[in-house]
Image 1 (cartoon, rainbow, N blue to C red):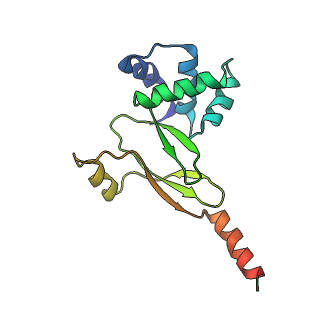
Image 2: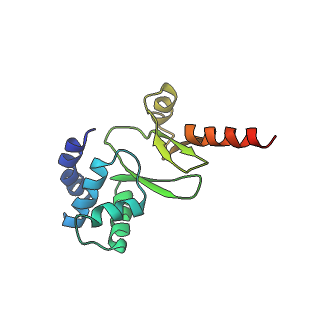
Length: 150
């Protein structure tokens, strides 16, 4: 879903979930509509405060209400950092790659048969799928360290 389509559904999401439309809530939804990867609460606060006067507590309250209403999804990285991402209606959760070296979180394609099969089972409710390891940069750094130890 592109940013323009997400923006069109922002107000619909608020209406559907019974949340009052406020400038702060719309600004946070706009941040997620434009995001290309999952965001931390600090990321959201920094981006929204560049455009609008809002305090950190308000951002946390908005994230909490959006999570509980199913507008965004929260997941935790291996390092214990909480990330948030837009939930696209009708789209199943997708896996994330979490680098144990630098902590980067990368969204992976959700269209694999295994994820779809599990997500479509009525006795399963998938909240997050996480794969961890080393990204290319961290792997190259580690290989360089191993070679110098000899």
